[in-house]
Image (cartoon, rainbow, N blue to C red; front, side):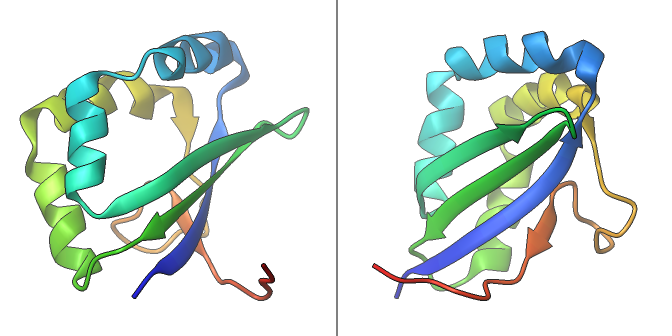
Length: 110
């Protein structure tokens, strides 16, 4: 079963160029870990001037929490996040333990 998932986070305007540069050449190990975590069709969109990032992916696994825990334990992913997390401004309203605030799907059509 596939689950569409959306998430949002702020981006620091002074770090926007760095964030774009990083994502223009995502490390192959990080991309492999994303795939191993059952994530497909992952896209990040930018909204300026509000400086918001909207992320979308399709989750194809059966245990999202376990897959995300495995991803969080991956050393290369941790190294990647050490570069990307300082560029971001997490929303104050996010749930405990979230970097990106997960969103509720309210509509979909193919």
